[in-house]
Length: 410
Image (cartoon, rainbow, N blue to C red):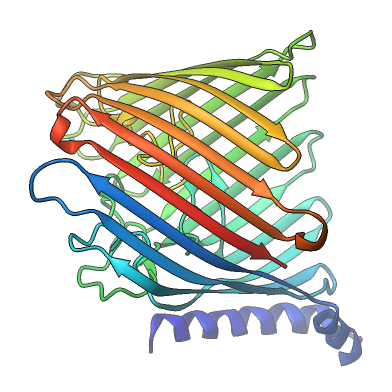
């Protein structure tokens, strides 16, 4: 039996249990109404990504993909909801001799990325199955045409004022394509012989990743969050951050964060990262600066950042590389940026410097982002353009990256 069939069978059994428990003396009309009052939403997408590379023998890369998603969530029935979300990706044009997009954009096919059961009682929500999820140490990326997803089982409680607590188990990780493979998630059972289809749900280690996440804003102007995660028999991690917004002119803020990695293998040395960030607003223009510092020296084990390609919560994250270098042992990084919002247009510029102690591993990254949300007759459309320049200490690795997206959401 295929993985998809096994998942569908499991969901049917779970649905049958909850529905039979909830029905009691009720007739099927209420259940029927839960489906008829369900909501449908989705999107249509067209993406064009192009890259250029320095160095002899390297070819530029161009790819255009299109697709989207369709999601359905039932109305609530005695606290119960069911949800499903299909994603599709198709390649319209590709000129990529070196297969630079194989693990990110080059995928053709349709995938059931969300298929979950959700049940709410009092201040508690239980949610299990395939679903999108984001937290500091477990976060699926939505930067490519196919959004990453997880098979995750969660319990979330909001009973404590101004506090959200989530505990869960992430068993599987759905990548962008079946050729995706990330070295810092070495414990994921990635596909070894991908054929260019959407990524499947791959095992996270032998027993998954357990985690607990807390977010609190009980103190005025202070937001804190913390998460502990454990990939069984591989690595565990602790993350915490706090952000304070000063109630004075220019709206200045200050934030601090901390990562700590604990490796199970005796050959790997535990490591840590701390970060600082500050910013203010002058005449509608946001100015900000971030800093991060990883412990250890060149050659030591890097800091574990989490699972998923959006698990980059460090204050020196970027668009193209995600600031991945910041987690290398001994690396110190800083970022300076400016952003502005005007009538639906969001614009941002960031300069980020990664001082990596390894020979010729330093990087300066320039990032320019634009996002425009249409209104009026074109409400639902948005267009984004991201442009990055990578200036490495080793000049033959220099590159540029241009990403454009047109999305209609309904």
